[in-house]
Length: 283
Image (cartoon, rainbow, N blue to C red; front, side, top):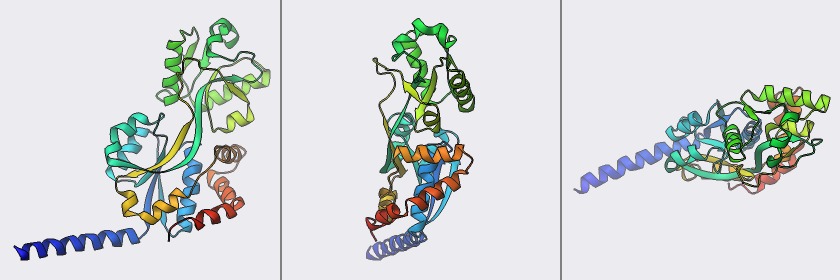
């Protein structure tokens, strides 16, 4: 019997040694959604991890379901997400296999908005001004969390305006055209976005609370990530990117820079901040 326990213990020690060796390679696969809020967060965190000696491979996804499935299976080891509302269904479905690593930003808000020159302030005022808005609310991609909430708002407020599905690019073009002519337009939009920086809007008051409050961004990982990579966890936890910086990075992209260039410029301009982050990482 003792021989069996010795064999099992030896096998366990070998397994631990192999796992430790893998951890010492400091290679991490990071998932991201190809969106203007998550891409800068991912790029900045990648830079900080690389400065700490990690090799980082970024894998892009187009849908939350695919991204969360990949994380749960271990195809990627970490992912930035808004677990409280935007991706709550996916988090709830997979949370037994996942863990929150650390918050990385806060303030995402998405709802129905109008240009600041439009003189209404509430969703309850849309119906009485439906003609001025052309009888429609200009939406984005079908299936997004924002469009789901906007559809709920149409029902809850019994709006007579049609919620038009489309794309972010089409909505942006419609918002620009309306601004150029100072026309009334209602759109589904969010912060952080360079759009609300270039074309100032105001979110319509939502007395029925259909749209969720400002949301936080978290780095999440496959369950056991923090235990397996305690130093990487400390590195990641040191990173916090304010919403205004995410907006500014995307403004630079809209002005012609690539995302990699915009992130590199941001990290260069904030070199002292990155050094302070380095001071609070565990060694």
